[in-house]
Image (cartoon, rainbow, N blue to C red; front, side, top):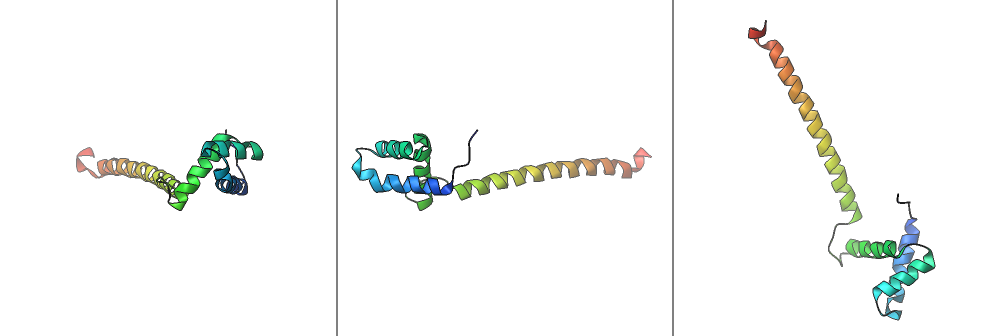
Length: 103
């Protein structure tokens, strides 16, 4: 179960990796050091860094806002499909009542 991380902590980790990246042989080493220093997992810092690059446009991918919008739209489409199915079944039911052959 994921826990909510303070957005300020995320931003600070990303900033620290970027500021001290040149001091380390790889981005992974810088990420590991910052993660250890801030008390979070290395993978979390790596994903925050990747997401920050996506938001800035320097890396291809879907931003958090776009992902949330897609999720919201998928939920709405699902709800509308259920509503349409209910209306379809209701129209079939009531059409049967109106058919003079059924009286």
